[in-house]
Amino acid sequence: MKMFPKVFVSLVIILLFIAAAGFYKGNFETLRTLVFLAGILLSYIAYRGRKFFWITVFILSAVLFNPVFPFYLESSGAWRFIDALVAFLFGAFLWFYYDYYGKGHRFEDYVASLFLPEIWVIVDKTRDFSRKLKRFVESDGNPDFTFRHIETGRTFAVECKYRSYFWKGGIEWDRRKGERYKIYGEKHNLPVFVMFGVGGSPKKPKELFFVPLEKLNRVPGHITRNELISFRRAVDKQFLTVGEF
Image (tube, rainbow, N blue to C red; front, side, top):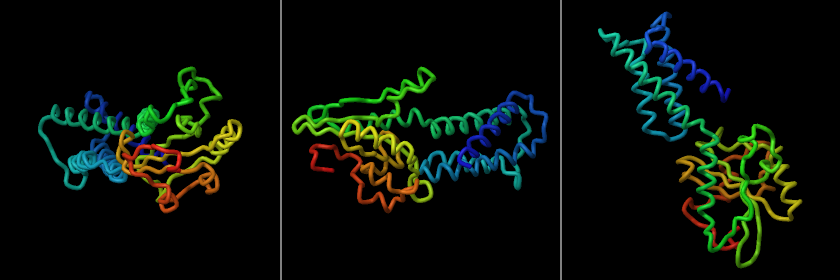
């Protein structure tokens, strides 16, 4: 079900571009209804992600294409332009909203900025070679960062996870990955934490949670926001001492 909005809206985008090119031979009332439904669906998704600019864009699109009180334009060229514009806006939102890879890297950069170089050393950083080589690279399954405190020598690993919003009041957790991180921690004799960023943007999330891995591995695949509250941190608060966690 999570992929349904992306697939449905993608199909609507294709139809809009076909219409904009003048090759659409189907029923335009059907197209109008599909665009209207896509606009409503995207409005809801944008609302959950608190993307207020996009909410406005999608509501206007839904109103323009609504099948109940339809707007009519004498110029077919004007409709082609509108079709192309709406398709572009729908596509741009899908790209940015579902850009998991890009969001992940931007959030990792944000997390790294919380650990000042004069206080912390980045001992290791996963490189995501699997994506580049198009084959599994075992080290890519390690936590994203391993930090060492310069003064005390304490070392720990951090896995970074960004989410645009809370899903069903919380965050889903993959226990299989959790077990892999646990094995990594035991092998290298260091604690592992997971940094969750929720809402806002990957460069500045609305909420931040720094959670011990063992806490997550005890949940049945979904941890609620209430369970995360005790691990919440100010989003602009940097890590200065090992005593903070």
